[in-house]
Length: 295
Ligand code: ADP
Ligand code: MG
Image (cartoon, rainbow, N blue to C red; front, top):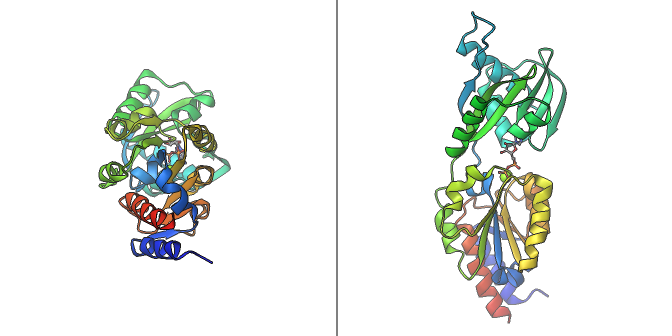
């Protein structure tokens, strides 16, 4: 039989828009030594939009205008991004007015490749483009650094052996992220885990309540990072999206933001259906209270 304290803990959580899927929440959350946050879609709202398109003008073609380049960079990038489920992809596909057909499309952890208008096109993280043998010029690198300094994500678009442009994409930190992180309480380490680069998380890293940042971590490696953090004690992970399902499952406690029907929800011990980071410290408060009544 479910102890009364657990039943009332579940109800108390539900009243706050928190679905408790496992008793582990009441048993382990109060003991959490490390609380790991995903960045994109978790500390930020995940609503990606295209902020800028920086094109490399074609010096060989006197008739070419910047506007032509912007359109063709967006169109070819969008043609490939239509095949990706990543939030960045939807922003770029939406920004492209018309997208040509694409063939031989492959989605990767860090972008998409395929043939558009007869050209082999790469769109994604600078490292994906470089891994396809395309060198970044110093001006490309400056554009990438500027985007990251602004907290945005630079998406590089290349074909014919050259970078054709950088699509600058971004979302916004959730307004409540600082208060949520500050309110978790206890002697816990707050850690940020992200596929993005160190520079893109600098504004989060600067917060006095954030003890550590693991940047540039691809989805599979997020799981390994969680396993390693477990040597420090009990680990809670807060994440969103299907990208984080493995990491949520690997943690002692997985807390998923958003709908409980997606992949991440299935891997989670608690689901914050109230899509709000202030619900995270509330999970801790409810779990502490319930735990006290259980003991
Ligand atoms: P996060 O941990 O912040 O949620 P991800 O692991 O989902 O980040 O992605 C890491 C990086 O890979 C992104 O910041 C982006 O540079 C690149 N990336 C991944 N998917 C795509 C895509 N479909 N198009 C362009 N870039 C992508
Ligand atoms: Mg994410």
